[in-house]
Amino acid sequence: MHILLVDDHTLFREALLHVLHQIDPQTVVLEAANAEEAAQWIVRMRTLDLVLLDIDLPDVDGLTALPNLRELAPTVPIVVLSGSETSSHVKRALDSGAVGYVPKSCSSHEMLAALRLILQGDIYVPPRLLGKLEGARLSAPAAGGFEAPPVPLTSRQIEVLKLMARGLPNKSIANTLNLAEGTVKLHVSAIMRCLGARNRTGAVIEASRLGLVPGPVAVSEE
Image 1 (tube, rainbow, N blue to C red):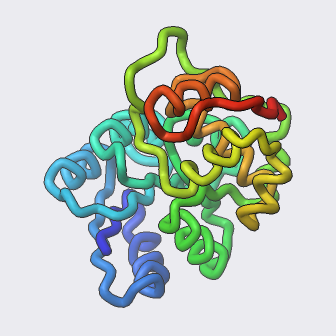
Image 2 (cartoon, helix red, strand yellow):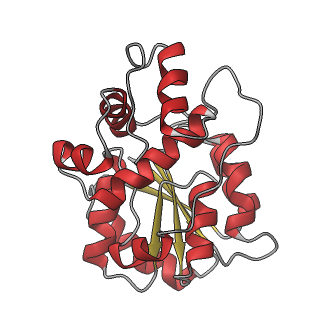
């Protein structure tokens, strides 16, 4: 496994190395101190499994750099690390394509659990921050669709999408997949962004057109 760690604090990177090796002792951790170095690593490495991106970087902050890094590595999960727990930062990270938001205040156990979930295809935001996102809608896609998702859906998102196509609301999807309802909401928002849809019905229709799910049915707009 290859993980790119982007943080300008050497001490934090060194501390996190011990945590990351608990995921897999054979993990290779690449280090970058700024967004430019991160971009260089992504272009050079074609076998990245995960990118951990700090917000507070010199020159270009992590949230500003995220869309470009996302474009360079469309299939690699990017997780934002931050000392901030404000809803605006969490929302902006998810809107820009991050699949996880891990506060630096979390324990090593919580971080490991989050990263394992993300590597399985899930989206992670700490439960205490999910409440802050309630009522703060993630950005709707721009007008004018496109022929294919700009970021491939994860296997978990495909599972959620198929259940959406069956008309299941978030609570039923959560129960079926043994996920928290808040996590399902994050997946649904990510699916709509990827498919250029403004609502669940539009997402299912576009997914059907792309052959990702069978023909659309009555969809719950929960």
